[in-house]
Image 1 (tube, rainbow, N blue to C red):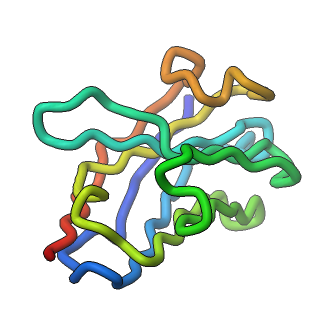
Image 2 (cartoon, rainbow, N blue to C red; image 1 turned 90 degrees about the vertical axis):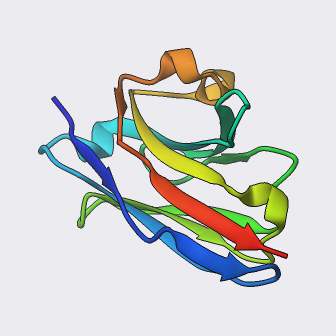
Image 3 (tube, rainbow, N blue to C red; image 1 turned 90 degrees about the horizontal axis):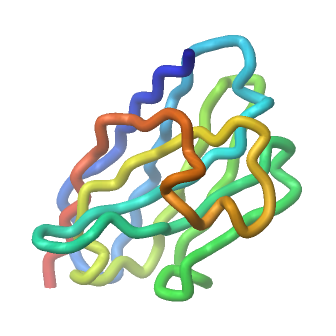
Length: 126
């Protein structure tokens, strides 16, 4: 069982930055690939970024590539989403998720993930 708790959300002006940590419980964090997804009002939840269990491989949605960076610290059981150059269209609830032994193109699919956090709200004003 893995419990995930996101934090770091808030209100920021367009062009600003936020960093979202996601803290995981459990001793096997390093066995899980981690992903970030988001859901805007009236829209489906969508993939944002993912990172392999070792941190060697990262994956990004085209809409955030070059602006967002995913990283992890296995010693702290935490995954981060650094968001720069934020736009109003980035406004959403952001969720982190854990995928046991996740790899490759499966990382883009919500259905691959085993555990989810409750989400943190990010609002970008214009």
